[in-house]
Image (tube, rainbow, N blue to C red):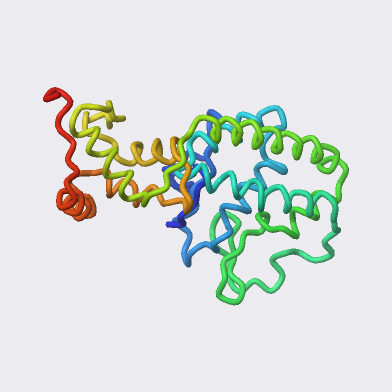
Length: 254
């Protein structure tokens, strides 16, 4: 599965009902496509959403949903600032009219609009050239400057809010995850739970990412492993902390 900070529907697209009854702000999940999707596919899918597919009246809600449900919001902010906005401006300022079908020369058609050329998977409409072609037409182009403004505002407001409310962690992310796990295990923090009542360590990892800035953004997988006392990664760090004299007593003992 592609590792991405975008919020992707946990249910694969090919398992969804043909007619969706309610709007979802997740990106559709195409990880079932084989051979594997190109690394930038979900970036392009996100770009297609903000450029064309999301109604402009719903765009702000879509952006905030993606930020709030990202497994790595710090990285998502960087992508918005350093990739989405510059590519958006490129498409807006450089419209083209395609003379040929983007699928010309395709070696094999796949399901759901995908095709293979030179052993690489592409999508017939999720493509920068197609985006520039769409922006050539006034029906699309007229709304693009306002869409760009909405993205800039959402990024500025969310980034300002996050940066003013989170702490800067200077140590290793694994150490922070371990400490948070210990605070949970010893009754200092009420953790998010699964429906079964078990601790949801994936949600713990996301909350750590949303609550701290890191010099190098860790993955939610790393934070999940180190915060879970049943994981061997957690046990490795536990031994190092014990050797250096750090233990956390249960909250009821002090």
